Image: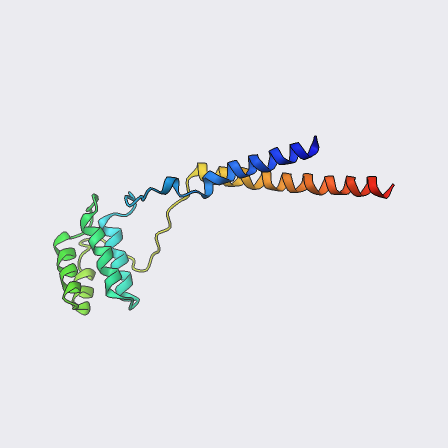
Length: 151
């Protein structure tokens, strides 16, 4: 009876932990509402400031030009910087990007970290607790088995 209970607890733990670790059915989620044209352009600028590959900066500027939220950035400057990077004029692109944010100060090097969903966190915590509970049950069972065999 207790083995069946432990088996059920382990199955429940795996069932609850699975969705938290899954990649949502394999679908790609390119749309991230926090990735505005300004955020993506700043990421491109940070890549250039750090001396990273200009191909990575081109990818960020590609995404910035396709972003739905273009508030707070000069799209002509982004297009000019994009073209300069395609022409491998990295210093020119770097200078253009510094001027692409009119009227607002900008921080370069700030890392974007998306927030985790509350449901995913709750499922992970519940799964972890069930795994701990299952391990505790297994340890208790082993102790009882040893006591029975020792008597």
